[in-house]
Image (cartoon, rainbow over all chains, first blue to last red; front, top):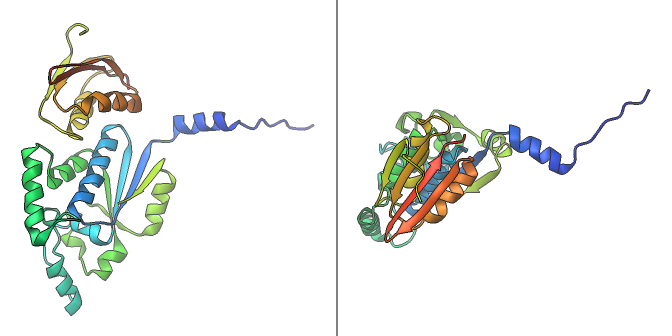
Length: 176
Length: 79
């Protein structure tokens, strides 16, 4: 007896997938610049508010956005980096026109006068909307950033495989 | 056009992207399926973004209109 198997058409397959798979968005947050971080958190909160599960993977300069602001580093270079690139979302400056902090001050003032949410407020919203935040283990090792200097809402420290697994299940992946 | 009394009202005036949709989404979480939210906003982006948000989330946009600078819309929770 031969078995007859029906193979679903791409349309049928797609409709099954879209009905069962959760909507997901994954994001690499590489930049620690204020303006790019604004984009990252606005997309994250907007997606989460649209019923999409969002994962933000913070790596390299992006770690600044989830640090609590302590100076870090243990070796000579590590300490120097901890002083020059002190963490804390409030210390993030714009990618253009920073002028040693003047630009940051100006942007903050302009954003406030236009009633735009500040970066710390946007991050608060993202946390509130259950955006999953992952810190990159390798960057933390290289930049000598200890786990304790991250904000407590970051529950996971992981590597590229974790991000790839997440992005494989996502309909879109962004690198910011 | 408004459709009767909404179950919940929101004031989103003066708020810019992404706060309006975040607030609408959060308010909807507390509501029962079938109930209606009405909100007023002032950011013109809302006119485009709320319909898009409704399509993404599968909620029903009952009405959206602008009078002078104020945008009023109603959403029925379906999901």
